[in-house]
Each structure stands twice: as C-alpha cells, then as structure tokens.
Length: 213
Length: 271
Image 1 (spheres, rainbow over the protein chains, first blue to last red):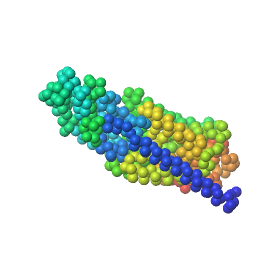
Image 2: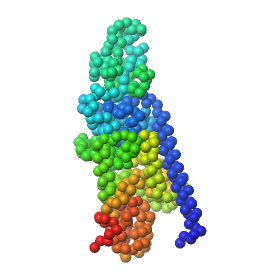
Image 3: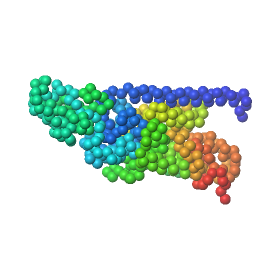
C-alpha cells in the first residue's frame, strides 16, 4: 500500500526520470543533427536524376533506399555515417561510379515519395550537377601534351554537352573541352573517363559556381 | 508449455528481416527498400505512416505511392492494432527483448533512472513532428534505430547500425528498464495512437481462474496495461490500452489460461 507520504516522492522521482530521459533523447538528436551538418565534400556527391533541390531533399527523401536498389549499374549509394550527404539518402560520386543515364530512369521510378521529381522527367532534362574543366592544367589537350578527347567521347550527349573547342590555349595546347551548362546533366561520365590521375574535368553540384570543386 | 506466440512472433520478425537483408541476393525481388518504404513483389508499396507524415510536415508534397503505402499500413494498424508493428515487425524489439532476457538471466534490476513516465514517448513523438516541421526534414530518421538497423542489414551500413543497436541496448540495460520501446520510442507511440480503435485485443476470458500469481505482470513489456483487466475480474474484459503490443506473452505465460485473443469491438462481452 502506498501512503500519502510516499506518493509524492515517487511521483517526483518519475518526473525527474522522465525529464532526464527526454533531455537525453533531445540531446542525442541535436548532437546527431550537428554531426550531420559538418559534412566534408558535399559538392562532390551528386543526387540521382530528377532530385528536388537540395534544400527540399531532406524533407522529400524518406531514406528507404529503393532508388539505390533500382540502379542497374550500382552507381547510386546509400549514405552511411560519415558520407558527404545526410545519412540514409542516395548519392553517387562521379569519378568512381558515374550515372549511366538510363533512358527509362529506374531510380526515379522506384522513388515512392517524389523526391526524385516527376515521372514525366526525361533523363536529358536531369540536372544532377555540372561538368567543368576545373583543373585545366591537368588536361592533356589543353596543355598540348596530347590530342586527348576521352571526356568528349565519354559524354552521352557528345557534341552537345561537351565540345572540343579548337584554338591556341593559354597553356599552349590546341583543344579545350568545353561544357555547355544548358545541356550538361552532370552524369559524371566525362570525369570518370578523364585519363589524368587527378581529373581535369570534374562534376560538381549546381549549387556551387562551376569550377570551384 | 510451449511459448507458441513467442515462436510465431520471432518467426515473423526474423522472416521480415531476412527478406530485407536478402534483397541484394534475390534474383526476382521479394522486397526492396527498408521499413521506411518498401516495395513487395515489385508491385505493392508499403510505407511507414510516421515517416510520410514527417515528410509532409517538413513541407514536401508526398507523391501517391508513398501516400497510398502509408494509408495501407495505417489502415491495418487502425483496424487491427497499432502496436502489432512493435511486437511483430520492428527489429528493435528483438534487441530490447534480448536485453530484458539478459536482465532476468543475471538478476540485474538496476537502472540509472529508476522510474519514468511511459507517456514520455508521446512527448518525444510531438517533438519529432515539431522538429520535422521546423527543420524541414524527416527529423526522426537521424536517430531512428529501426531505420539504422534495417539499412545495416539491407545495405551493409553497419557503422550507424551498430551504434544504434548499442545505444538502444545501453538505454535498456543501464538507463531505464524497458526504456526504449516502453518509454521513449515515438514510432511505438504513433502506432499505438493509430490503433486506438483497433479490433484485435487480448481479453481476460477466464478471470475467475486467475490465481494472482503475477506471471503475466512479470512477462508483459507494458505491465500497466494489464492492471484494469485483472482488477475488474469481469469475463471478457479486453486490454484496451493503446500501449499493448499484442505480443501474446501473457497468453503464453499464464498457466491458468486466463487470456485469449479477441477480434471485435472492445468493451462488449462475448456471448
């Protein structure tokens, strides 16, 4: 039997326990949130085709991984702890596994929430990122070391997204891979194909001005 | 007595986990995704209504497949019982049950916080919904151990998965007995409320046989839900509390067979 004298401290203890436990969960949440904010290299991790703008992606993506499992080329990855994007969300790193630009968009069709845009999307209208000759000094064509056109040939929109512009470059070469920002989807196949050890042409998210990644 | 409901429950839980974990190896997909949203047999989408609600509160116009998938799960919870999810689906239940079994095996009943209010989880739930709306993100997915565990199994992301498992185990073992599932988890709180008017209950069919041995209280993960039933001693009284997991532990445990399942509106005595 619980007497009146005993009831109050019991209730107080329960309140204290509840408050401490709640503070623990809130503290964990805040710590986890701050940990997620401090991500390295976010500009180099690209979202799947059709993804809503990055600010909205945190609201739209439920981190189910269906797009990652739908990707027939294994390009998409699910972010783990320490990944450049929010944990559980999909991304790809162009130099390692670029997007193969499937015409039927299996990743986009797998997304249940609409985080990868509308089903009417055409892959050529996707804007995953933007290629740029960010390390021109590493480009064999640009410096005149060889007539390389690996990026040009790798581009699925060859002759439109990337053209090889003729003319003497500042470094003494004859050809400059030139990206048309209005056409480039940011698939990353050019960056993957670049023969320089550190790619001369790189793809970054369109959130940053081209060439800063 | 064979704990047949426990065996059935573990069978369902482990089968579901194996289905998710084996997704990369099945040629023809049985299930893909995670418990946040999954696609069964390449055709049926099921989504966690709490996750979808958070996305909507965060300001996203959620597309039809996830909405319908969440509606299907919510309907099941509303018609049967919400916390069936906790008892029969959620992988974290395996962890917290294992910790409780360990506690019993070694006779350890201590905790840093001896008591806490079990309604706390509804406060956490409110906080999660508020955080989603304020931050514009699916807030609980930062912490949700359910997602971390299923992602670890299906995608090999064991870093976060192991941390989440360890945190939940430490919570129940050291911080607060039955702390995670019984006090803090907002997912359980949400499903419980969804199933407020569900039709599947445990009822006291033979309360007159009760010897007040306390076995059911000992084994129940939410013992407070049993109190009204055993106090009233009325035949057919159902456990109407939203916190009941419908795990069937009391059915397994009671030597006098006081308890039975009941499918139907609560509060009415059977003929």
